[in-house]
Image (tube, rainbow, N blue to C red):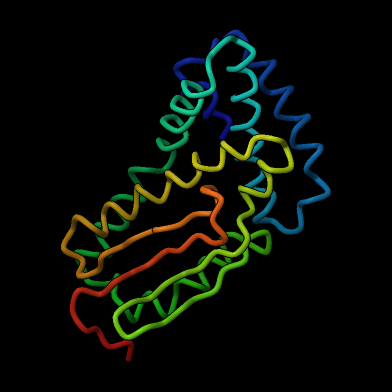
Length: 198
């Protein structure tokens, strides 16, 4: 994430030392909320985004332009790797109902830790992950900028686009998000043809 600020086109690069100072202050204030290794990693990302946003606003950049610049820059990190990983999984038919039901919840909990609360729903023609608590949104709420949460939501478009455009046999939908003031984020995987979970 240290390279993240340099990728923001609207940011005056002479202010990078100031951004690092702002990041350090924000992160220090969040230490009491760090409960595991995963939350530390995710709060580092959040703190960089918040510090950059505050600095852009101080430069006179309007909030909408700041959001646009941060979303674009944040979305670049790891995007190519994620896209190709998804493509390979789809090409080799690894990304199936059986894979989703056997691995997804375990993977989510391992990667995101206990600042996220996620449950699964298994139906005849679909598999759904329901996020009841989002660590990103909690961070930005505490810091007075809940409008920044969608920057992280946009990351989902990178991998979900591959599912919906690569003839995976799965149609992905995310009809609600906590960032939109809904109760839950719903990650719905609808199977175009009956798939056995056995």
